[in-house]
Length: 493
Image (cartoon, rainbow, N blue to C red; front, side, top):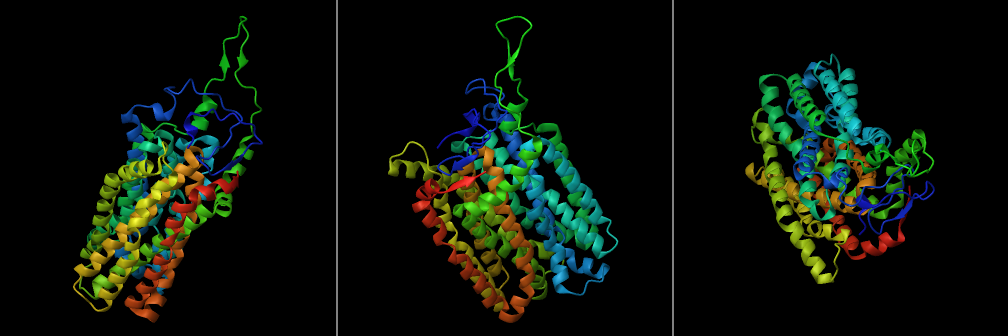
């Protein structure tokens, strides 16, 4: 697998086609070369402390922005009362409209990083995110609330769209596993941790304070990024690198490269269409995105039922109803530890078994093959124990199975796509997966009230469990045939 971080990237503007046989190669006509493989300006050559600072901050940004979808869930009844909401679908939409912003916003905002760099996009998006959270806290009616909710989601999706690209910028594939596992905790633990905080906040301070707390956390994380983070996009760094050298004659300087400068509007237009093109033209990205969309949508559907289930059937209070999410949280921490312990060992074992010196991206899918069936098992356990009103600890154990399995859907998929597309294409590939994932998280929960009314919690979750199990063969097939498929698939960018 080629390492795009050390390539010069000086292909002509017309050479924007790449197969998926390794990291995606995207030409930049205005790039100068690195000063050798050890160039200190190259993000992968930064000090470990500086590289890990960037990884931790983008992970915190992803955590905070992914707390916003469910922070208000425990207080949704109070919010509905204040805004005179009587429809259960509108109440659900008040929670899930934010993921719609997560789906749409990055498709428009993230491509700006290809033209202006990742850093200004992070900073501006953080400012907009906090501003509209304040708008939510001060909303006077449901219309204002919904508009601010959507717009805060549009800005909040930026860390998810750019974070994997930042991690790919500062890490090599061999050392990327732990960093991506930490980053993947954001979209998984954020929606789990937030209701625990939101439950106690809504009960004692009111639902508006859940948004004030989010604004404070978002402002703190944004300030940290402003102080610590630097530009990591190799194309932008090289574009800003002085492209002149001392000539043999005095008072005369010549450019190192004389390629024509591509206009920003053309770069932006290509960046805007790139995620959609990848989604349409790559079966790997499409199927993996659908799998992630189903799992994420199912989790958000469950999030919208927890308050009703545990308050009405198990007599949890508004404060303690958020504790029902802790089974998911504990499972996600256990999954991260498991991934860190097994990831490198599995890759090394597979390389030794296959007799290769460079790891195949498909090695990332081994843990997915092993653990993702737990999503279906957890849905069955949760659904039927709630239906028969078994002791509350048993359905929470079911959610732990769901969380553990979901981690090994999301994290290996992100690693797999980052390995395929490299630092120059990771943001676009993950932008495509985020689009389907958050669209599902917005609209699948809207079907929850009708589905559970018709089927009950037992058969309703059985249906979801069977759908999750239907995707189990996907990583097996991609592990076996992924290399051949990548060789035949070409994505025009």
